[in-house]
Length: 453
Image 1 (spheres, one colour):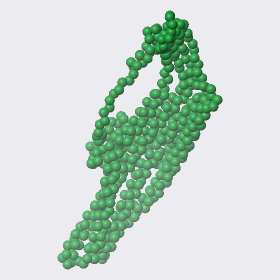
Image 2 (tube, one colour; image 1 turned 90 degrees about the vertical axis):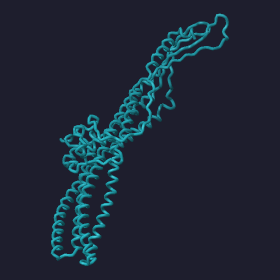
Image 3 (cartoon, one colour; image 1 turned 180 degrees about the vertical axis):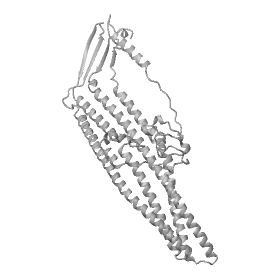
């Protein structure tokens, strides 16, 4: 071995290997811990949306619709996993950008069959896969596009989580408004039922005057129980989305609004939709990655070449040096299988992008049409509410004057309640449409300034 180490090639190679080993990364433990619920704290510097980051976060005066979206982006548990995927993609891109290491080989004759004056034979060599340099650039660019795709996918996930938080905010707030209307109506029917029941017990009224109030009260109670179940579900879903403990009760501001979206402005935003929506940009990056892999597969069809330098000594103490070349003969395989796979994968990425862009445009047009229909319906409902309120007022005066029965008043009051709940449900649908339109347009969650012509 001492004689072998005299070989400069081997000695320098071993010194280089030792130097590289000294710079290796070391193991760092990461003990598992139970997850802790998030707190109502937001570092606005970590938010990916500029206008949202500029919004003031102050939970002391209640959370508005933007503050809920901010909290969701920061604390959502699923987003942590997507961010981990982005970190892995960047690590893979870094790995693909590194050049392959050269290969050092050494052999030594361990036999003792040599005669007088014989020396120990050995051989040492240094080789490098030159063909890997040919495809290195395409592979690195492919992983860079993969990393960009993951970053944009993360941004789209954050976008959707913010939108989902706003939708749940709308559900909870509108549910509380419906609850208030039902409670007010229940109080009216409960009071009338209590008074008529006392009169019935005193023999002043018959059961026909009590039954309508009781039936109306029971119907309102049923609606209240159904609404409470929906509110409980929405509240738990919102807490889970925000990464909060299940029992957390959020103070939500009912005066908050998603903001109206101008239809003409929304249609103009369709022109550069593919350059703005993160998921469409992610598909563009995915296509570029597959295109680079296709290029790499085409380059890999050429002969694989490995160059090497050797230094050896035989048992008669004669040294020799040489150059080795290893080359594949592309007669049978020629990498045709990988080329076909890469070409088909690129075509799929191309088609997926085209399909998603068309679907996004259709979603925008559908929501705009629904928004126009809902606006017309809201105007009609407002007129109906005014008429129904007038009918109820006349019925109440007639009942007090003894010119109408209890059933007529109860029907009028129930009809008004139905119209009020219908108007609140329509208002909820319109607010959800505003959130949905901002999402499918890929515009900022707080304003439309970024898409003005």
